[in-house]
Image 1 (cartoon, rainbow, N blue to C red):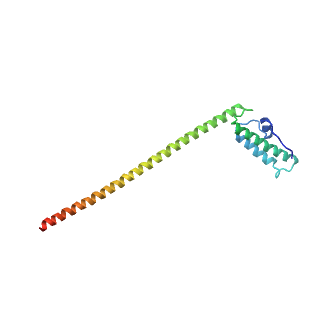
Image 2 (tube, one colour):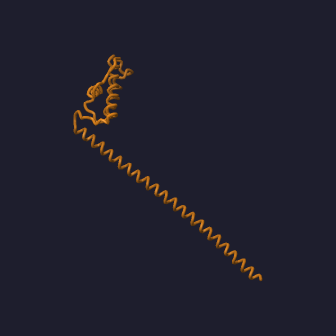
Length: 155
């Protein structure tokens, strides 16, 4: 097995049998397909090992190229499909943003409802305590009246 070196994007695309690239998924799909085809455990031909290494290097090259440089691919091939793909990606990003905003608002609403419920329970408990205090005070006043009636009536 010789040392394989990929020197250009075009060479990497050729190694992965790609005519155009619109996303990292295209690269990954081609990589997986060719790895299955050329893997030494599956393909015993002498060229398979070199092809397998070349596919790995090409995948590594393109993956690094896309990731490190935030590369927007030059369309090689059908520009309409790239535009459609880009429009879908932008639409998906907008939908995800709207969904995140909706989730955030819903979480805030849940927090607000929980706070309102906590306050309602505190008020209810305060009312119960006040009712108990009033009941106890009324009982004390009643007891005082009864004592004074008995004390005054006993005289």
